[in-house]
Amino acid sequence: MARLVMKFGGTSVATVERIKNAARHVKREFDAGHEVAVVVSAMSGKTNELVAWAKEAAPNYDPAEYDVVVASGEQVTSGLMALALQEMGMPARSWQGWQIPIYGSDAHSAARIESVDGAGIVAGFDRNREIAVCSGFQGINPRSHRIVTLGRGGSDTSAVALAAGLKADRCDIYTDVDGVYTTDPRVVPKARRMDKVSFEEMLEMASLGSKVLQVRSVEIAMVQRVPTYVRSSFDDPDNPNPGTLICDEDDIVEQQIVTGIAFSRDEAQITLRRVADKPGVAAAIFGPLADANINVDMIIQVVSDDQATTDITFTVPTGDFERAKALLESKHETIAYQSLQGATEVVKISAIGVGMRSHAGVAARAFRALAEKGINIRAITTSEIKFSVLIDAAYTELAVRTLHSLYGLDAA
Ligand code: ADP
Ligand code: ASP
Ligand code: MG
Image (cartoon, rainbow, N blue to C red; front, top):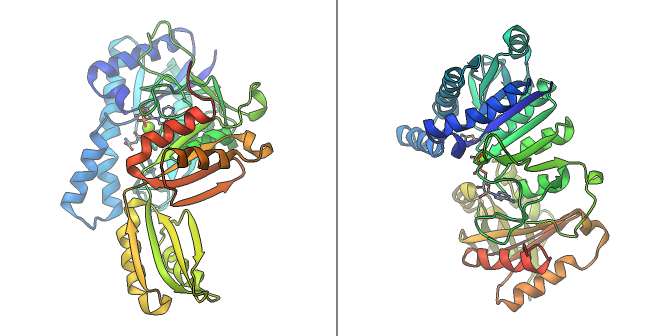
């Protein structure tokens, strides 16, 4: 007998029919004698609709009430899933974040899970093998007692954190693809499914834009050693495939230099032209952005011809672009730049692989390949196991496919 957490994402619970199908996967595990906790997302599209309603009601919304609104999508699916399981003859009970409870920080709409108390769920397992159907994405702040949500895609994190809290043997993330691919299979039909991917690489892929898992869920899986699989809810419930295991680097026999290509459209570029090239200028620019909680990602500084001024280019998340621009415009005098240019039609393409630690020239090959396709690189960053380039968004697919082929990732 094992203890399992089974998470179903938005597409997998998009209709009552799909919920019934997901319930068949649960029945398979239940019939095998396992203890099961299920985590559900909202029906696909629901959270977007709720976000839009909150913004329509109040453009500068109170984040605490925004969380009340957007958390409601998961309440519906947890109740429907419990009903579907009961209809199929299984004992099942829904649990909202506050009932479990899953405690989250007070950062509304981006809360971090502080702790999970699985005692009530385990009592149900012990009583009558009751299946706990938990709403993903939501928790409660232990001090304000208000509902908090975990950021978009947060049900993955609910599932892995619950698996850790329940000391589950496994966390299965059921989604609309049958595992983690070398890149988004919707963009590159030749993407290959991986049987295993290391925690480190998955973490980079997720943070660099592969939305298949929320970043925080991978962090928790890595730190708390939760065996986590990504697999398909569209498989035959009686004959499913195991999917992709996220595991230690050492457990992977065949290592590639580059294992995956990720891309993120959530980038906007800002260039400050002719900033005085003197000590303190970077602090004058990036200090206020940090104080405003705006995350700066790529940074490049170019010394201009006159040696007295410099151009500074950096990227911020698209959602913070207007705010960053307004902030820097308000500091025009202090920073003393000549002009500010911005671009939102840009994309960050990244290549990830632990093999980069021991191989030189991996990024250089990409620069050459992109140049041959006439793709101009606006900014570059590198770190131990990845590099990223910022390019015009119009070239997204071409660039991703080019790098995917270059590193030998295309399926035969
Ligand atoms: P869910 O609603 O189940 O949480 P998501 O839409 O959040 O599903 O995540 C699954 C999607 O992630 C897939 O449909 C796929 O388009 C996308 N994706 C992006 N990168 C990858 C990748 N490297 N491997 C698999 N899927 C990926
Ligand atoms: N429903 C939430 C969202 O769309 C959480 C999730 O699906 O993981 O972001
Ligand atoms: Mg998701």
